[in-house]
Amino acid sequence: MNIRFLETAIRLAELRNFRATAERLNITAAAISNRIAAMEQELGFKLFERDSREVSTTRQGAIFVDEARDIVARYTALIERLDPSQAVRGSVRLGLPPSMAIALLPRISATLKAQFPDIRFTVVTDAGAVLRRKLEAGELDIAFVVTPSDAGMFRVVDLCTLGMAWVASPDLLRHDLGEVLTPEDLAGYPIISYEAGSLNDVRLVDYFAGHGAEEPVLHRSNSLATTVGMAVAGIGITVLPPVTVQRELAEGSLCLLTVTPVFPPTSYAALYLPTAGTRLAQLVAAVAVDAAAAFCRGFDDALARRP
Image (tube, rainbow, N blue to C red; front, side, top):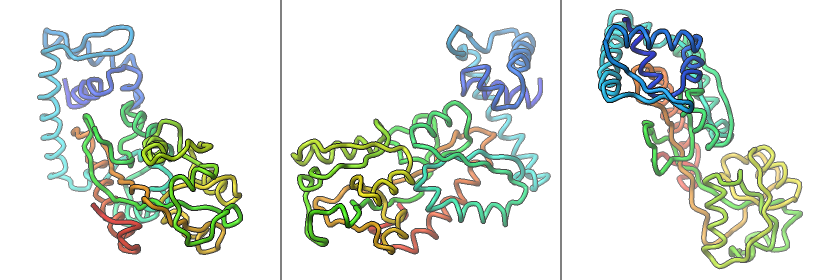
């Protein structure tokens, strides 16, 4: 039994699936099974129960995995103390929604390349719900998502809060610019919402229902670029962080609407699993906090602020 075997048991306990664990550790599912079998034979008791759907720890297995986390963490700390360069070497997979890619990714990328050149990072952009599923499946190491009400097993690092505003093409408007609009007024236009069932889509639907407005015609998009393009083309109005459409606002292809009550802001956080193998995820989260602070300094608090 060695550190790699312990890390295998930890990952399998987290992911509850041999194939997902194999993909995460970049080895075969058969190798995972062999390592677990070897440990169980050496220990004299079963670590995991297996069925057709998932893997779960036995009572003794849960205790073993908890202790294994401590052993691996201490081993990692020892290696980093003896060879500090080991702490900033490796690969990390980052997932983030388009709004965070616009706001934070350039600064994060520049910092990692300049200060941690031995870190290899890959980026996936997608809707928050998809990113969270990928994180849970072990396909990502860290994800930036709308701050969840229930983080479950994930560690949460607050990044920033972005103000939300209604925007539209001037050619679409039937109201005067600067006129104070209500949810009922907005419901008279087609609305471009977010991916069906996403947090901001639910908030948008609740916004109209909660203020007694008729249900508007809803278009849905899971791409920020598509949403902006549809709004510029006059297909509908939408609510999004103004910091993501600064160019369109400056060019006049989109304009800000004055609406009361205002749409609530959206807070974002970094999520990752707090295990021994997540030191690079912790580092990326720390870099992201600094990037968020620098980004927010360029805007009024109503548009972007740190928690």
